Image 1 (tube, one colour):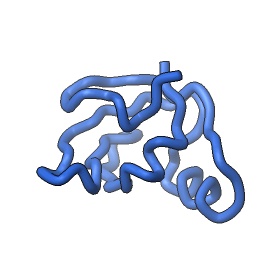
Image 2: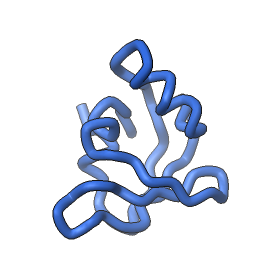
Image 3: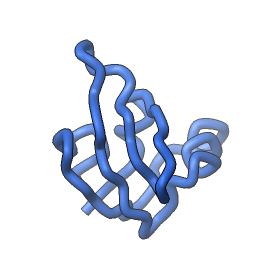
Length: 73
């Protein structure tokens, strides 16, 4: 299984499935990260947290712990 955390900087991917439950999953979905959405990884902070993403034309920051819950293809 490949997660959003494994995607290299500058690479695009498509969200396949969201894992986890409760408030964490809700927060990810509220950011617009849902099944079938294309995500571009713009930048990763030097120590790995957070990841900066482009989703639907918006720039978002996502913690790596949350990025592990997003399965991509």
